[in-house]
Image (tube, rainbow, N blue to C red; front, side, top):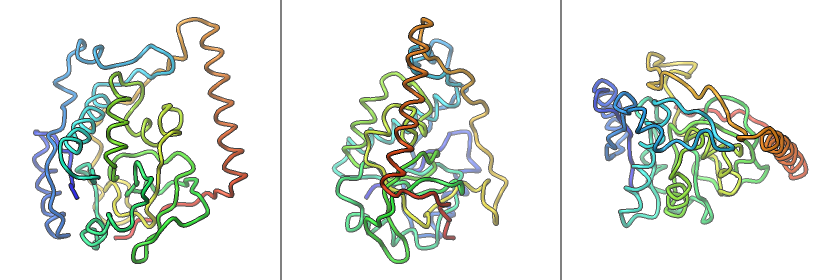
Amino acid sequence: MLTFVINLDRDTARLERIEALLAARAVPFTRVQAVDGRSLSQADIEKVSAYPTAVSVRLQAGEIACYLSHIKAWRMLLESDEECAAIFEDDIDVSLDAADILAGIADWMPDDADILKLETSLKPVEIAPGVETSIRDREVRRLAGCHIGTAGYVISRRGAARMVAESERLKMAVDTMLFDARGGVAETLSLFQLSPALCIQAHIQTTGERAIESSISGRADHKSYGATLGEQLANRVRDRLAYASRKLRNLASGARVRKIEFKP
């Protein structure tokens, strides 16, 4: 299976760190040259941004660059003969048994999975009550709610092709599109969560390294619900109804809220 690490050319210290970390975990990887938000002109941003079409947010240059970097990784998977790829950002810590877990993905990843989330944000998330499969002391459960973050996940060829097709114009940040129903895509993807998680962003750990901060300096600052008052009202109502429907569905299915722990 392919393993990609997204890294900016100017972030040489991060590259050295992740190289040493993954070497210690016996995890080989291919570096994906990240798109640098500092290199994007206003024309570049306008070319790929869906804003202000409904429903979209005004993404900052760093968010757009991050999204474009993940698209590069998806396309690299599609250009290969592999069925799936693990994609990591370069600011993570990784479990000691990462090599064994990743090596066995073909045996334990659910057949219908588009994306298997490997990371945790240490925030409560809704997950399905049933265990789909397990590997060693970890469980794989279906994600029933929003779990933001793209620091570590496995994506299938089907999932990668779908996301490339959905990303001609960028409506929201990449983690919103992948894991939050508000992006309009996650609700239609088959999403799973590994628990305990295989990785975590270093700066949110309760122990260990905390010095690495996000390279995305700005976040989306405005959401568009449409051009006219009527369109805005209709989309806001639709948004609220969809949210309520998801909550009722999860309640009926027995989904529960739990914090996904990280196993060092």
